[in-house]
Length: 454
Image (cartoon, helix red, strand yellow):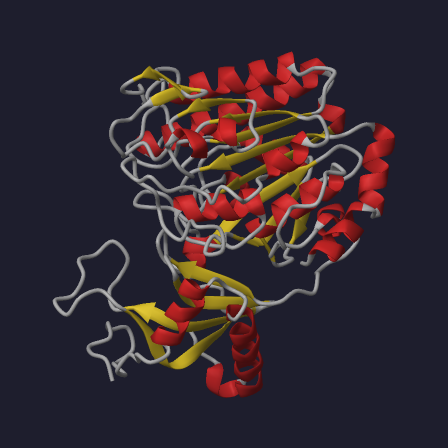
């Protein structure tokens, strides 16, 4: 989406309606490593009544995807509307890293500040830990949380830029986050606000308070999800009690697929993989009187779409750079069933892996090892597949049957669109794709790992 198109979206009916009613509040709840099959409303046997209620009061999406299967890149695309490989976040950041989300990128919080919004981030940040990269320099008035994943050390708990605990207590973390989030809602009464609530869990190591620990039939993972569900209920209660609920957009989703203990439902793959189980996310959106209740949408959309959609709804100024996401407000309201868009690209680090276009998923390259396994003796490489693999996700959501030979026209069209898009990326990313195309996987029997490079 170019700057002119984005400006046109700001003049669209949703923004006009929002202005007439007063600027809407925005609550964005983002779980960490929550799988597509982990919630009751998405088919789990676990009880998640508050999230189920949120879905009943809004619209639930079944084809919503992340732009990347791991933490930092997925958050970068969520908050900028741009591919993580454009904004300096191709990989997961670690506490010792000095890098972060490029300083010339604007976040959704930056955009909403131009409309007078109060803004707070509560939870996991993971877009840079040095002062210039922390939330308080990226559009948020205040921050409370662990600035990266809870398996990284030191596990600092921060308030704004001050460390308040050298080792965060995981058993009290969800409760502390929830108290901070609901306090912000109550103190923002009378002013439009944006609460970005990226939970630390269910990323491992797991922790739950005494109220929830040992109560789930799924062990500690189930306990953690029960407390996460409780937290959603507390946020919704605070919105109701302050009178803010009637003019608040609430979004619930996850950054990527499950790691070791969660469920990707019937989808193939997990966190760290660009199979659907690694990138397809639960996504629920609710707003009284604006978004239909109890609706289920199969529309294809992306975390890239959140920033342009919310910014347009709130009448915010346009970002300073073109966004890759689309304004999907009409999908949220049910005015349209699908939107036209270029194929969505999925990267792992700097490497293009595959692409989604409507019902089609085209895999073009793959690592020569499985995710989270040791690299082969020849070294870790991303290799071009001998032939692209095409999957019809409408009939084959677990990507088991390659139908590229049956649809050469789709493969040809998608490859042409991929090539055109890759030319717009930074030189390092486009250059990596050019190098990848020179290295092919040697054909191997179905289900085995590639053995060599041609």
